[in-house]
Amino acid sequence: DAGVTQSPTHLIKTRGQQVTLRCSPKSGHDTVSWYQQALGQGPQFIFQYYEEEERQRGNFPDRFSGHQFPNYSSELNVNALLLGDSALYLCASSAPSGVNEKLFFGSGTQLSVL
Amino acid sequence: DAKTTQPNSMESNEEEPVHLPCNHSTISGTDYIHWYRQLPSQGPEYVIHGLTSNVNNRMASLAIAEDRKSSTLILHRATLRDAAVYYCILRDEGNTPLVFGKGTRLSVIA
Image 1 (cartoon, each protein chain N blue to C red):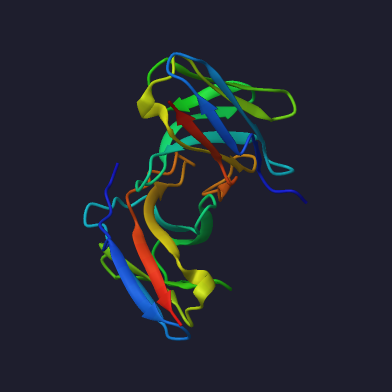
Image 2 (image 1 turned 90 degrees about the horizontal axis):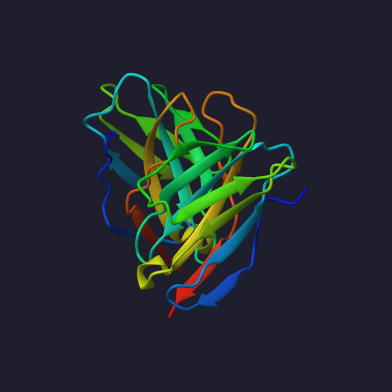
């Protein structure tokens, strides 16, 4: 059983460009969350998708948007990239809603903005 | 969000027990205490969680103070593979997003 898979593993972009990151959740999981982790910091919550809708959102600008597909996979899009967007982007999935479902994280996509 | 306080770093010798403390004096009655860890070059992974009673699983034990204002993650025999950043997180029962702090960086010495 594959866990959470993310692609690509590394990406280099320049300021002003747009980027799309992809995530496939663990089998049987229907909820996907995205986190941004700057160097030396803990992950910061961006948003969560469930039933193809954004259910919760953290304190991130509208440049960050997402999508969830019927097969539960998800994309994170970032427009007008800034140098400060350089970070590790983590995707996490969890099982159908219950109490305190564990999150399973992928290994992340390392984004560098030059 | 209720906050947690953890030491920035700790060091342990291999095969010795490790006690990782976490203070959460503003915890509410419905907050569960979760621990995740992040090994180098990986995403975080779930370790353990509890509400009031002490909890044990194959990875670790969680000791929760009677007033729930602090807790301790116990690794019974640290190995080199346990070197990671350990995060103590409060989360209510509604599957709200995890709010990570900076965690405790655990180094294990052979």
